[in-house]
Each structure stands twice: as C-alpha cells, then as structure tokens.
Amino acid sequence: MKDFVSRHALLFSILVVLVYDFGMQGLGALLEAIPGLGLTPLAVGLIVQGIACILIVALIHYLRWWRESGFQRPVSNLALFAYLPWLLLPLLVMVGAESATRSSGIVIAYAVMMLLVGFGEEALMRGVVLRALLPGGVMRAAVVSSLIFGVAHFFNVFQGHGVASTIVQVIYAAFIGMGFAGPRLYAGTIWPAIVLHGVIDFADVASRNFTPIGGGAEATEAAPFNIGQAITAIAITGCYALYGWWLIRRLRKRRRQAEGAS
Image 1 (cartoon, rainbow, N blue to C red):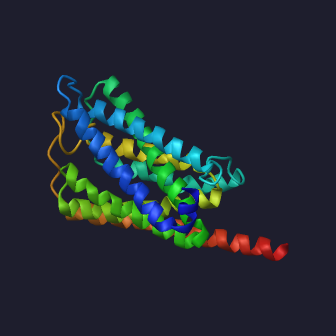
Image 2: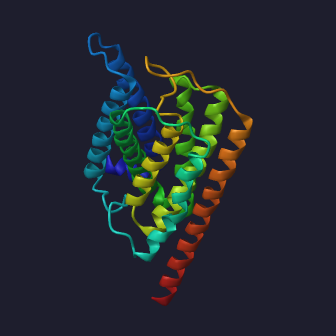
Image 3: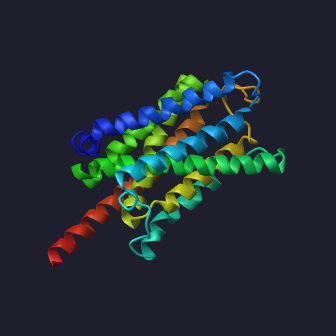
C-alpha cells in the first residue's frame, strides 16, 4: 500500500476521502435502520464519528505518518501565531445566533461530536491527504487537498441539503481547507487546526440551537437558501484561503533562504 501511495498520491487521496464519506454515510444509515436500537441522530453521529476517528488513527499508524501528518510540536512557539486569525471565525459564526434552549447534556454531546469531527477531518485532509500530495510541491499539495475537501462536501445532498446550499458548502469548504493548510504547514503542527475546526463546527451547530439539518427524527428540514448569507460565507472563507496561500508562500521563501544559507 505504501508503494501505491507514493506512486499514485492523487488517486489514493481521492479514494481515501470517498471511503471516509461513503463509509460514514453507510454506517449512519445502517445504525438508523437496525430495528430496536432507537438511536437518535446525535447518538448515531457520535458513534459514526468515533469509529471514523479510530480508522483514521489506524491508517496513520499503518503508514507511520504521525510526524509527517503534523502530530508533533510546532517548529517554534512563535509559529503558532499563524493560527491566530482562526479564533475570529467562531465569533463571526455566532453573530445573530438563536438563543440556546438545549440541556447541558445535549450541548456536551455536541461538543464531543464536533471535536471528533475536527479530529477526523483534519487528520484525514490536512494530515494524511496533504502528506500524500506533498512530494508534488507544497503549494500544489495545499491547493489539491483543499479542492478535494471542498468537492467531498457535495455528498451532503444525500443527507437532505439543498443543491444550492451544498454548492456554497463546496466552495467555502475548499476555502477553509486552504486556510487551514497554510498554518498547518507553516507551524508544522496539526493540533491547533483540530481544536479550531471543532470549535468552528460547534459554533455553527450552536448558532442553530443544536438542531441537526437533514434526516432523522430530531432533525429539521434544510434551511432555505439565503443568497446574502452565501455570499458572506464565501467572502469570509475566501479571505482565510488567501491567508493560507500567503503563509505557504512565506514558508517556501523561508525554506529557500535556509537552503541558500546551507
């Protein structure tokens, strides 16, 4: 498998993301369909995300890519400031949010699930996939992995999301991917990306009073498409994508200078 990854990095990246997406959707549908379980969408989400994280950990361990995937200390404490602009996004997401009326147990369960989502998606996309594509160049790896991350969100249409809103998700997910790839590569560690990703997703679900969108007994129908919100989301995440691109350019310059000095 390691030989396949090195020879066919792009194909491997696409396949592993497809397996991740369709595997989670299939497992979720299976758990909901088993008679007698009576699992809520939240319980199903926790189980599915937990299993997904375990499998990603197993993949990283098999490939021996812990350090290469960013599970290490930052190159310097100063480099961690590259993640600083991401602290603003959860606050922006919460602007105009509904007042939370859920129990503390529900809130804690969502917090755990969003942290699992943050770990799973970052470990896969800014960990495994980014590492697989790096031999082709730092900028190319960041752009391609971000595009894969964005396109993967199109499968949300199978979970009850509207086509228009899903297309917007594809665009801003790709921008977020690029935005996270920059500090991940610049700082050399993926841990802040995992935590921040979880916090951002938690802020998003909290802004909807912890109500899932899509299928399931506790879910609501997908929110109507709002062109103003779509433009705002794309504009904000586009700024993060530009920031990630700028950081990668700085990283490449730093590496060239280090090579010149040696």
